Length: 84
Image 1: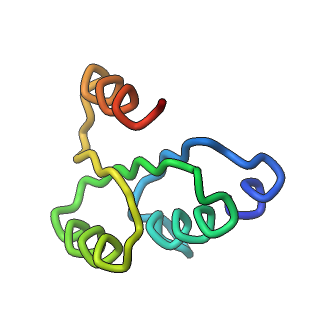
Image 2 (image 1 turned 90 degrees about the vertical axis):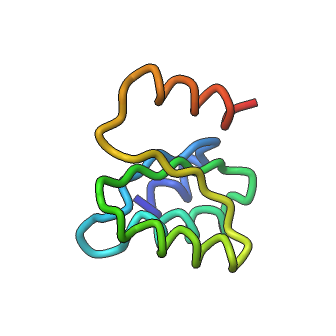
């Protein structure tokens, strides 16, 4: 995903926190280092990921988090807040 972002230069990344290999948080950090204006919306169904998000926030990484399952109305509302 990081390699694709180098070429594509996204404005928004939507990712699950728990993934094989690199976590969504690690992916988001890598992408934001390349594309600082990229907004990040992370999804998680695990309560334990809140600690990972908090740690990232203390390191000045700005991510929004939605708990799964996500209702489409909640996703749209969050996207309206994240995107300009």
